[in-house]
Image (tube, one colour):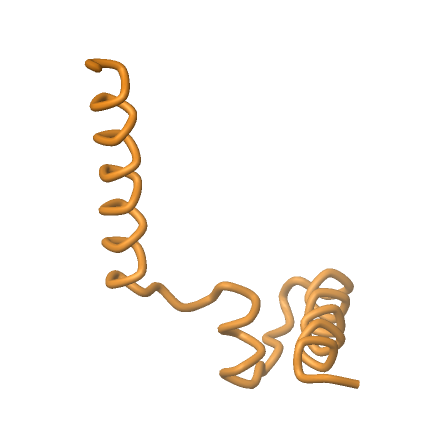
Amino acid sequence: MDKIDELRAAADMVDSQSSENPSLGVPVDPDVADFMGAFYDPAAEADAKAMKGLNGQEDEDVARS
């Protein structure tokens, strides 16, 4: 079993436990939480916005020519 499979299995277990009893706090390993998207990364968001802007700019350049 590789790392992604282990993270997916752990994330499925967390999901199952939290769905069965939503009032129960489920401790989650930071790597699993990161895999589940729990952490906000402003640098990654800024990169995604910059890439989207570049893609839009390229589209405009093509339309002008």
